[in-house]
Amino acid sequence: MLASYVPILIFAIIAILFASVTLFMSNLIGQKRPSEDKLMPYECGNIPVGTARERFPIRFYIFAMLFIVFDVEVAFMFPWAVLFKKLGILGFVEMVVFVLILLLGLLYVWGKGALEWE
Image (cartoon, rainbow, N blue to C red; front, side, top):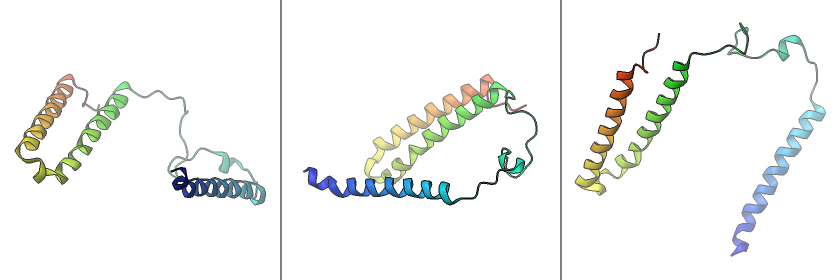
């Protein structure tokens, strides 16, 4: 049974060796000419403005967490849609309950004002 894992082990060793040799060779051969422009943080092609220690409002983080929660929940709908006909009416009812729970959560968050962006 362990013999079936030998190709995976060989592949992992080759991948690690390739990555290590590539990084070592690029470090060895690559040109090292640091300048002020090259050492500057990159912000989508724009010159950085302000300090990196700037504080963001807490509603930014709350909005981001809510996006992740609802985005992950929507990802659960794809397998359900693929198996929609096999699941029948019980699967449909379960998804309706799931969507209603999400809708209640959304209404609660909306009522609390977490979706307000000022």
